[in-house]
Length: 260
Image (cartoon, rainbow, N blue to C red; front, side):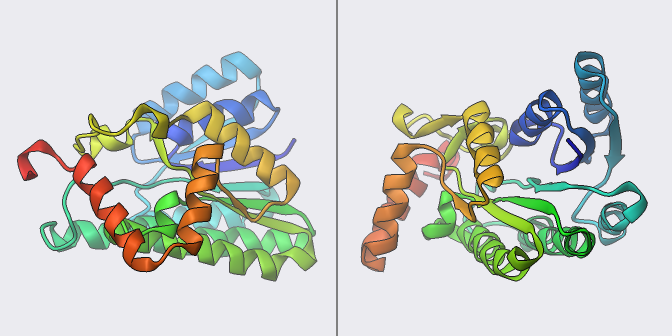
């Protein structure tokens, strides 16, 4: 089934990608900062499926460590057939209230790393005439939910552009754009999500299954769930003023209690 490299693989959607891809027969390269959690997951997957699981600890916001992962992707002697750019984080503060250092880190991790790793993987895939890149974006990329929306807008549009470039060479690129997913993402960002309706929550296994099906089908943009497909359809046609008002309301719902 080939080799899949997954960033942000120690928890959340990244861990679920590792679990499902291992079950489908893929060998894995797991990338994240937490070497201990990666090693534990790798051992679990080896025991369950008997596949090769490589652990590659790296902070993708650090340029030297990012380059190590890029070099692994560019190594044609150990070709990677599927790149899953999943690593990311949210912030509990608005752009102006937040530290600029954290905002720069967000750009490094969710924009620059996606660009660098996609470039590293795409070259070999293009030469081989096969391969796939799956970039984890967000429904926020169609909205105006702070700096995170701007970052994820880059991921979605970049994926579409790269898909056009690589399609003639047998390589697919997919941006998956989920809404709110039950993972550690919001807890780590210390966001208060108690007022968000349960109907807007997705579960990680379903998001991963649907996105992998989209990759297999060669779909360029995948929005998991009927609810969010409908929401994105509305966002595409609604006046931007209305989009901003709705986004402001949602931001209030997820803001930490100490900032209300």
